[in-house]
Length: 71
Image 1 (spheres, rainbow, N blue to C red):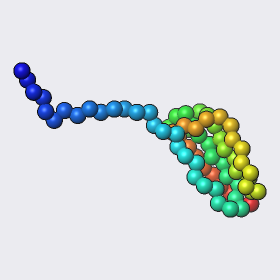
Image 2 (image 1 turned 45 degrees about the horizontal axis):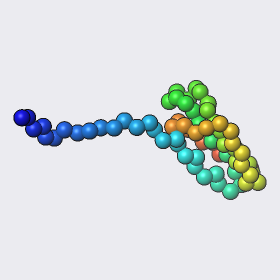
Image 3 (image 1 turned 60 degrees about the vertical axis):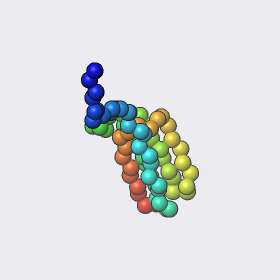
């Protein structure tokens, strides 16, 4: 009988979707989520207007960009 010690079990889990950061007051913000690290395949976006209203489409994924412009 052979006893193996020190073995490790490693699980590879998919990356969680990146979360959008908060848009500051009096700013227009766009968060864009991508399917790949090269950021060439857009899968969703969130728009935050100067008046505080928001709308979004698509889905979130692991790769994200965020732009913020003062109103």
